Amino acid sequence: MPDLSHLDRKYFIDSKVYNCPFCNRRNVSYKLMRSFTFDWTDTKHCYGYLVQCLSCGNRSMHLSFEDITYDTALSFVEDIDIDSKIFYSVPTSFFVMDERIPRLIRELITEAEGCLKMNFLTGASACMRKAIYELLMIEKAEGTDYEVKIKFLKSKHPNVDPSYFDILSRIKDMTSEKIHEQSWDKWNARYLRLIMFTLRAVLHELYVLPQMKAGRAQAIQKLGESIVKDKKEKGKQGQQGS
Image (cartoon, rainbow, N blue to C red; front, side):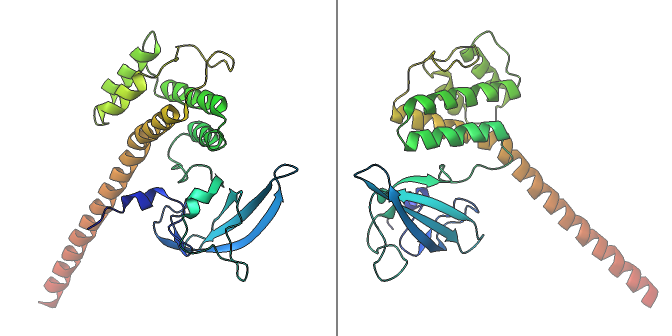
């Protein structure tokens, strides 16, 4: 069978289904609520699209420099790669980050992804550096410099893939001081994406998976307790009947 996993990394699968950035459901139906246009410059038009998920009801906004709707109906043109026509979306990140991740870090990564979408590499770089510093502070990472602190996190969380921390430890231009906007050169887009994907993976491992596992364990425990309770009640009923 062909590998279609790349579709999970898209917003729009086709003109009728997409991957919702809010409820994180794949291949769910959506509705194009309305479209609008405005002047990006005095010679360039921009087209905006408001899309509603038919599962959770949340709406997202998408911008394109092309009109990609039908003339006769409010729907995207079929048989085109819609994502390739969109240059900016809100939420800017493909999927909304889990609320179990610290709020400030979520906001910084979201801002960085928005800057990257618009090719504002200096702003994106600064936000990612700040996000990593906040993680080090929240985790109370010990060490005299950045690389030592990352190694501390690696030893503190042995269940997280160590290659994630190895990538973060090799980030260029990081210092142990707090962020100063004028102190660093911008990172290139490919380098930024690597850092973003890696940091998001680390955050998911640190803050989301443990609570998911705890929730599953609690659900299993409650199920087991209910079965034991049912058996006891049936045993009492049997004794009373005899």
